Length: 312
Length: 203
Image (tube, rainbow over all chains, first blue to last red; front, side, top):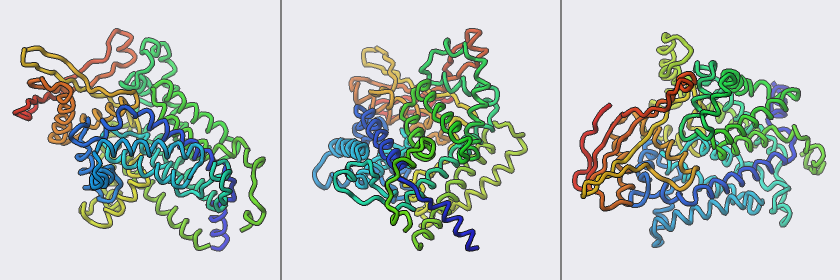
């Protein structure tokens, strides 16, 4: 029992450098910055209340309250700001500015923990209050930001570390949070692959065709796509096998490199061929942070943990 | 050491929840969607989904504190849904067209407009949600809110007819034989400033 427990702890709390955390921080910082910037013209329109929005935010928040009253939402900030005499439009604009600032903070590593918490909270508020206009990318951003804010920040490439010589996080917990991210990605890809395998359209390639011509993802002219029709069945089966095989092949040193490159290539193609660049970016960031550092072997060269830290 | 125990317990519970929700969504897809499994699997899948849902406290009253706490955690961790994107099959998409009727008899057609591609994906997602909701009242309410946003930009309009339809995608073979996307009418709603909405015209 004791041996089992020790092995479990060894697996869950490996000694890790913080390279993966740097990748996650910089990647999610870029993601938040691009996300905010891409919505700069539509932020208020998508998230306003009945007076000026596309969809009444109050309706989404009322539906959210049926599930739970405690999930963060923009309504809290608007109510708080209204007491201070601010208009809804001003509060939404301030929220957008704060989210952009938190993204930039994460990108350069300034006030890492505060930036991570602020980015998670404000993005979650926007994603939940705009529930009708949110999609998969918001889900993965919440997952990434949730793990990031709980991880031992700052990493050594952050400005916080350079300027203030903030202490590096506890090493076993660096490894733990990386394991959490690794496990989560395995579950995501396994179930994504499994559910795709259930549809006949992924085996005969028709789903690849449909995904590429379906508005608003129809970036490439179908006249061009149809010339590649013989590749669609192969592409469909390849995607299914790539996803369902992820948890089995990503852990082995022999297959990790191939699997990670294929998964990242798949997401790049999704970004280019379907225009979903934000979705692609967040998936690549999560994958590279989780399984990339061992691949590029930066850790061995740049590890800077003191011996006593590693032992404790 | 104590922190490690706490983390291990959290890890176990967290991943039990993630796997349970993913499993529930997979079972739901088997129970409701056309899949490669024979139809007889559907009833088993439906029963299994019910069991998993019950284990996830989803059969408790909405006001139940356990359910509320669990829902809060799921939302803040981003694990409240499964991961069956574009699965088991890629669905068609939806289109909403607003017919703007002016007092002088002029008719103008408008689509929901946003300022960027990133927001365009979100509007497409919104139309998917409107199209797939099983609640007629919610669908009508959402379309009415969207019509109101059009009204704010065109205050002189007398009435707005919102026509909601689905886009049928051609197969590769059909495309090669000249068939293109077709628009299938699903619902129409009439709105005026005085009379908010009439009964929708059905499919």
